Image (cartoon, rainbow, N blue to C red):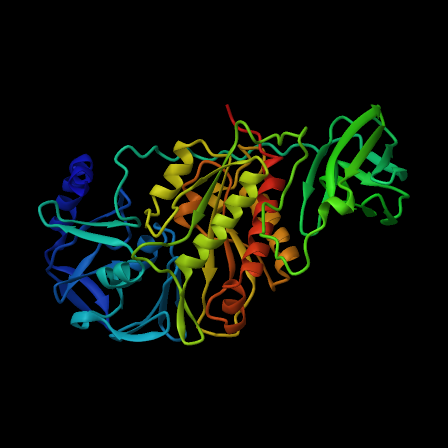
Length: 515
């Protein structure tokens, strides 16, 4: 496959090699406080099939290639930092942190001390009068953070790939054009009254009144605890109590609230059997509920009920996404890549196992609620970082989420965070990846009650290469003794899965699939 890649770019590579090799004789380089004549070869550089032209081409020291760190590793989505005070270079991959110091052959990989082979150390190098570049050993760092490196002596090229193989027919990335901002919707609609009527021992009716025409609304049921939710887009609550206690016909309370996107009416329910939402006039909605009689729900004492799907719909209700929208769930790592490793009672706990367990719980919740789901892996396999988003793109998915477990050198690090890629954050699907991440994090925190580490950006390969909104969720820290215990329990995994599933459902209702 790589030979095919070389063939495709051969002309460019050969031309560049000829140019740089011609300049190689007697080139003066400044490093280690002096000026040195470099008579070796300069190599061309190909990163993920792209010919790179850095300010200083790769050079050879002790038969090992040094490359400019920032131009190379930021190209594959890694984070690169240089701390001038300590002359420290740090390269962060998806799961690996590599720290090196200028002219020091000792490196730290995820905090573990190791020696750089062949005494090839990082250096600050520049052509005389040119820009100084931080040059690092390419193979040592690349293989440490999971990249593939190949030297092609015939064409004088170094090839680096961020995934295990290359897609020969990969579609070129289209230039992103900033869309014109949409004006705020007008006029505003206000919910001015919410009232209820107990119409029978097992039936109730909640009436919602607004001061204008209700153009559309959404309704759905959530569980743990059970809630019937009605959203009115771009409406506000005005003069209505936030919490109305009911305590009859299975309705314990009615709660209201709003944000910039919608007004929400929530019925806190018990034993909901079915419901209807009917627009009885331009400005009125009636929410009618029917519960199952308590005697029909009786369970023998001491018998534990199996956890079933926890987002339900009534038999007459079809989610807007069911027929033509697909969610792709990606359980991080797998196969030979265990991901981060924790410890519980002296036994190892592997990230790849936790991510698959939680992912399958999310799958169960969504499928039992009528949504279509596809997994990038269903067992202990290892799809590449290219195959995962490629699957979502090929299947024309509406949303993609990759589920991971965090790790840190400090055992006290804790909490939940969700990432999205700035490179994949437009609103071509009606909602951005950032909004998707916010929905998922909000729901995860609601159920897990974990520390909020926020929504963050990172150019992860699996999220930035998706066509659709895509996020990466870090459930908790496998390096934290308390969190690793929680994440191995059925109850906590179900809470995490419930939050992820609800975040997906909320986002999916905003998705407008492009034609």
